[in-house]
Image (cartoon, rainbow, N blue to C red; front, side, top):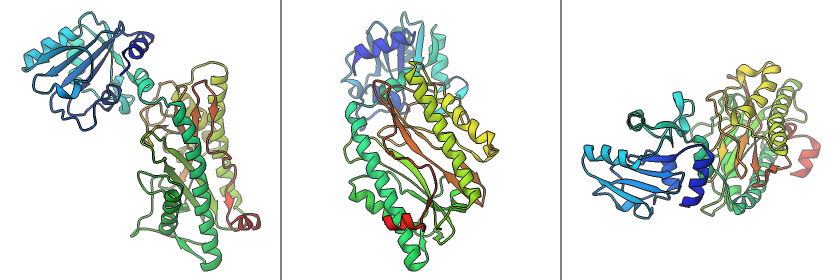
Length: 401
């Protein structure tokens, strides 16, 4: 924990302190920022107060001091509930406005880690509690230069694996007339392993009607056959083998024919335009030295889908933050499921993945990742990106298999 960096960030956020509260691992943000060992035995409440002037105070139970013994701070011990309240009052001395992991009106559930009762208690001690949402992502979502460079290799390897899976589909249709979604999924997993990539769950391989359920994924017992004249959506996410490797997450779509039907191609083109609109706004804002917030990129993308008349079938946020976990703790591209007011920060990564899902008929999605460098360069590490659905039986594609 770098106290100097924390204090600087707290001052820049206009706060007197950052109050990190936890009860039985309820606050993953606090654990990460304070570098609490993942196997720490925590059964009692604790608080660490980092002030804007660099002073750090921690309030810990008398029988559970070990989990935070690595945090250099003024230590306040408590045993009884009365001592907890008195200790909290002492720890918050001269703290007017404090940041905590909560979201006003529950607008951002991903950052709501502190229970309402504790917020009420802190407020009763004279503190003005504000959300630590933007403050926290500076210490949980920003990637190192090594992570950004390593992620470029991961994204390229992931794209190669997905293209290889589509070639498996092409060959199977030519030779046998069909292949199951599950078999393609397993082939893709093998390719990820060959590329020395790992994933936290099996990828999505879905024919058109199945893809209309955005989180559908085949299993050994539930899988459809891929035959001629079908759309095939593949969504895969993976990271390198190093503990600090960052996920790449992409979605491509193919069609098992020589040409793609016009109505399907039209829908996909809408998604490509929507995806590109979000990326363009991000690039324009960073190039101009301006802030851009998660909900604004969702709006930029969703406007295109709405204008084309498909907005009622775009049923999820535009994208999510990505770190060493595929759904990271930073700003999401969301003004649909939530209203994400957090700024997109330099040094962070996020997905852009608009979709059109006609229930029981057809699901389409295009997805890429954006990585913003520390200097504000907006990059797409999986380039080249998809602009049209792949006709998997077209001569030019077959020739490449």
